[in-house]
Length: 520
Image (cartoon, rainbow, N blue to C red):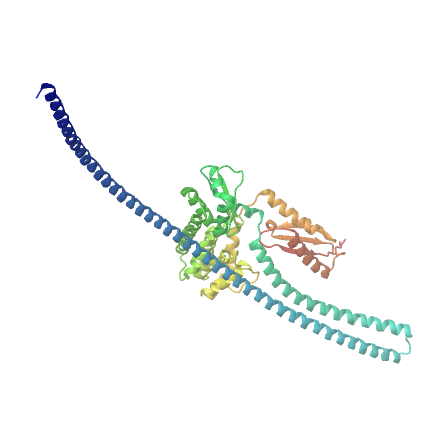
C-alpha cells in the first residue's frame, strides 16, 4: 500500500473517531444539562408550592378579617335597631300619655258643659219666676192703687214702676253675685292650671342662661366632622339626643340647646366623647348617646342618694330618689332646683324644731316640694300638682303629700305645709338665690305698670314684690265695686296675653273712698 492511501485511511479513521468522540461528548454534556434543568424544575415546583401555601394562608386571613368586620357591622346594626325600637316604644308611651291627657280634658269639658247647661236652665227658670213675680206685683199694686182715691193714675204708675225697679235690681244683683261666685270658682281652677303650665314651660330671659350648653372643640375642623357629609352626623346627633346642635362662628366650640336639662347633659357628654374618640358616624353616635345616657343615669341616682343622706329622709321609693337626682340638672329662675330643695329641707327642719312641729315630715316635704319640676317637661300641669301625683303613686305619706300639693296655696291644711311654704319663700328670697339683671328687672316692672295704666279710671299703679304683685289705685267716683272686680280680671287677662314672666303675678285693685271734715 502506498503512502497516500495510507494517509487517507488515517484521516478517515481520525474523522470517524472525532465524530464518535464528539457525539459521546455532546451526549454527556446534554445529560449534565438535563440533570441541572431537572434540579431547577424541582426547585421551581417547590417554590410554587410554598407560594401556593402562602396565598392560601393570606386568603384565609382575609376571609377571617372580612367575617369579623361583617360581625362588627351586624352588631352595630342590631344596636341601631334596638335603639330605634326603644325610641319607638318611648314615643308610643308619650302618645298614650297624651291621649290620656286629652281624654281627661274632654271629660272636664263635658262636665263644665253640663254645669253651664244647668246654669242656663236655672237662669231661664229664674227669669220666668221673675216675670211671674213682676206680674203679680204689678197686679197687686194696681189693686192697691185703685183702693186709694187720693192718687191719680200717673202717681199710681210711678209708684208701681218704682217698686218694680227695686225688685228687678235686687233680683239682678242677687243673680249676678251668685253667677259671679260660680264663675270665679271655675275661672280660678282653669286659670291656675293654665298659668302653672305656662310658668313651668315658658322661656323667660333669665332662663336662657341654663337652656344652652357649650362643648369645647380642639379645633374648628372638628365642626365639619360633626356636621358630616350632607349633614348626616348633625342630624343623627339631634335625632338621637333630642337637642338642637348649633354650629356658628364661635371659635372652637359648639352649642347645645334644649329645655330638657337631662337630654342636654346626655348630648354634652356624647358630643364630648365623640370629639375625643374622633370616629364620628351615625352608628358611633348612637353608641355614644346610649353610653352617655347610662352615665347620666348613674349620676342622677348618685345625686338623689346623696341628697337623701344629707337630709336624713328615709323610706323613699327608688324612683323618687331618681326623680330627686334629676333636679340636679334643673334650674328655676337661675337657681339649681336640687340645691334649693336641700336648702328648703334644712330650713323647714329647723323651723319645725323651733315651733314644735314634726321635723321628719317638714324635712321630707321640703326636700320633695319641687319634685314635680323633674317631670314638668314631660307631664302637663303645674309642678305642685305633678309632684303630688308622683308622691301619691309611690306611696309617700299623706302628710308629706299635703306639703307638696299645697306649698303654693294661700290656704293650707297642716302646720308642716305652712312650714314648707315658709322655708320655700325664705330660700328663694335670700340674697343671691335667684338672679336677674337690673335691666330686665326694671323692664319687667315698667311693663307691668304700663299694663295697669292703660285702663280708664286708674289713678296710680305700683309693681311690687319683685314684679310678683301689682297694686292699682282707682278713682272711687269713676269705678264702683263691680267695675273694680271686672277691672282686676281684665288686667290679669292682658298680663297673660302680652307679657312673659316667671312665676305668677297677683293683681290687687284698691278702691278707697274718704270723707274728711274738720272740727273747729
